[in-house]
Length: 153
Length: 153
DNA sequence: TAGACTAGTTCGCAGTACCAACAACCGTCA
DNA sequence: TGACGGTTGTTGGTACTGCGAACTAGTCTA
Image 1 (cartoon, helix red, strand yellow):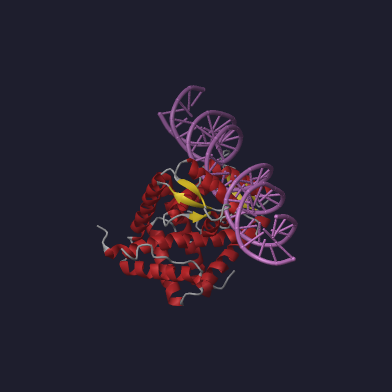
Image 2 (image 1 turned 60 degrees about the vertical axis):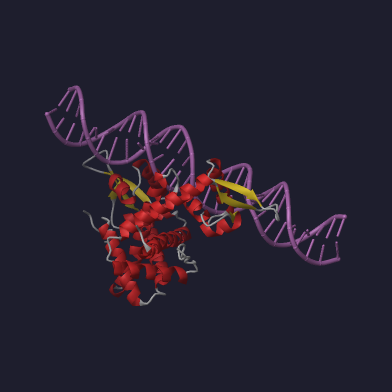
């Protein structure tokens, strides 16, 4: 067993795991509300910023390209996404949201956001600020770009 | 009217989602290191506190009982777990770790913990404390016991 | 003892994810 | 021009996940 002194660390690791499960659960619920699997919702949200190629998408979602092919196939069959053949490189293609897909992506994103905000709303605002800051730092430390999607607005 | 003030909220929600993905990724990697799927690892870790019945397990893992049957089947076939028929209620059974399973569960748990601690170690310790506190509060607000699964009931 | 209820299982289905092998295409170098 | 190595995305095969409906078997209650 680890020393008692480390208990704070142990709690933090456990807390992170539990928090992760909670967030996943919220995300899955919201996705399902829109008749999407979590993976499909994540894909759509990722595309909200504009078309992306399969290779980059694979990196962004931490998926093998072969896994991605199937995922894209399924959402394409639902008419939420289209493959656009690249004009300069005929091997490549860009995945782009259709109107319907874009609508769903935003609905789903807003839904997740509002659920999480509601959940976090139970915390005092100072804690929320600290939490966001600490998480942001964790993410940047780990090579994840913490893009601020709405900075302009 | 979520005015400008709400921008912090938006960031927090996005940060939570990203953090969640990061933790899931760490968890999946650690599990794989021990030749377990994340779900199997989660099951084993849940059982580390002692045998649990299918029904309660289903609640703890947020899984339908039918999904759980298969999951338990697979780890049982690997000899990591056994079904123990309940003496008082012959319908019920308790799922219990075998020696091998218990070993794996602890290895995996420690691995995840150390990876997450390492990840969090890049934060100043005051931030870690705040983070753990805030997450703990979030979890308790949401009905999740923050204890490390040792409680019977 | 009949009927209601509960614990787990089985079955069918869709989706996820990996790996290995592959076709098509690009850029380069001879 | 054309062969070559590297890239892009796809296919095929396998294992796992997760749900809902229908089911078996056992328990409890009236």
